[in-house]
Amino acid sequence: MTPYYFSIVLACVLAISSGQILFRKTGLEAEALGVFHIKTLTVAAIALAVYGVASLAWIYVLRKVPLTLAYPFVALSFVIVPVLSRYFFGEQLNIHYFVGAALIVAGIGVISTGASQV
Image 1: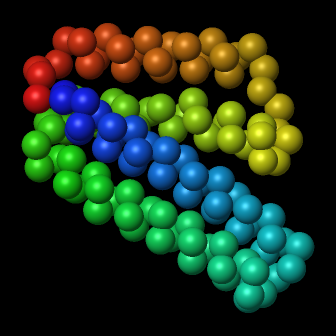
Image 2: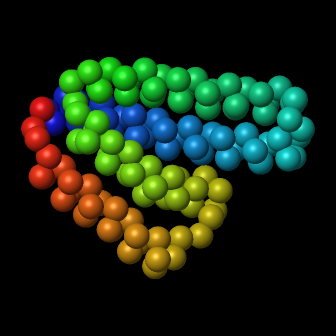
């Protein structure tokens, strides 16, 4: 995968991860303020917009990058979202998270080095 497409794939993963954080924030605000509160609806709309832009970028990437090479990188969201959750919501991470995250990153490394180059 070229650095250009790699950067777009990573941007998509970051956008998807950010969208998950915004969905969590939406849920917390809906619980505190109500589902139809303007603040809740605004955060939900932003989350959906982030997902929409990420989806369009993902479609762009898949024109040139095989899904078998690009898709494993989506697993990075399983590494990124808990870190962001820790930062924004104070959620706890334990040793199991770090071991699992290391395995995910190692797996992506194995898959990407064995895949065809684009």
